[in-house]
Image (cartoon, rainbow, N blue to C red; front, side, top):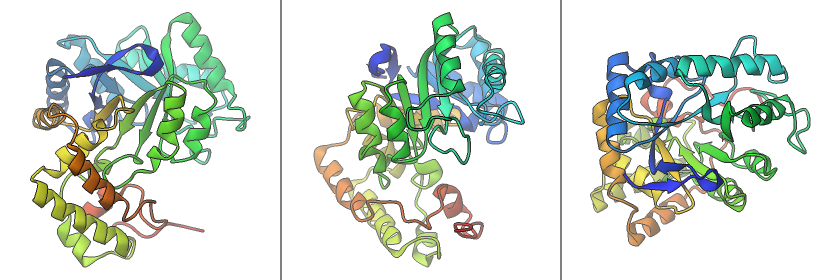
Length: 331
């Protein structure tokens, strides 16, 4: 597994990393999750990302790493714990850090990220939004000075608000999710360029849009749903035809597309089994995609360059459960 330097951190990370969401108990049995983590490490993956918001992911990973076959770099996050959660309460935030350390079985955290720093409707982190200041940043800087955390990070899902926080220059790593994949490219407009300008580590999450790009949904796409625009349906069918033409499986195409961008340091996989780990590692080890394939993918992506308003954010879930989506909610 190839490794690269994660921006200005100096950390050497594998191009493929382990996303901890799907090893939690709502998605996987513990023993299978443990085997998946160990198999990933044996195959050269040395970076694992988790969060308090990922169910019991921190606990599962902490137990699995007790007898891990090699060292790993861990990132976890602040956000949502303890309840009631108050992002302006420094003591509340400190309790979350202490719980992460306990669950992960570590005396320090390599990268501590602020979860959804760009969505004040979810977590209102910034009393000074213009200058990006507040209790969370004060605590993180204090913990870094004490060696409890090594680097400061952001884990966000917006395409433009996140770039504003990046430009503050106060963070070392950014994890941008849902906005950089085969058909969703908005992070390339501002988030990735802003992070590159600040020499930040750049981590891509949800390269397969949490399942939307993991397999073909031909029947659902052809039938059409009121929340899926005609342009998006045409785009999906064009992508499926190209998958058949080029002979590269859709998940492999998705992972290799992300690592084809030299500005991206690592991409998270959402594996929950040994088989999925091995499949993803095999895909990434084939390396970046050829230029002619990237050109064709760019043409397909350009069919819908921005996310349509009524399109559900977790599109992968709704493609698998098309009757579950009830619309975008109140205006």
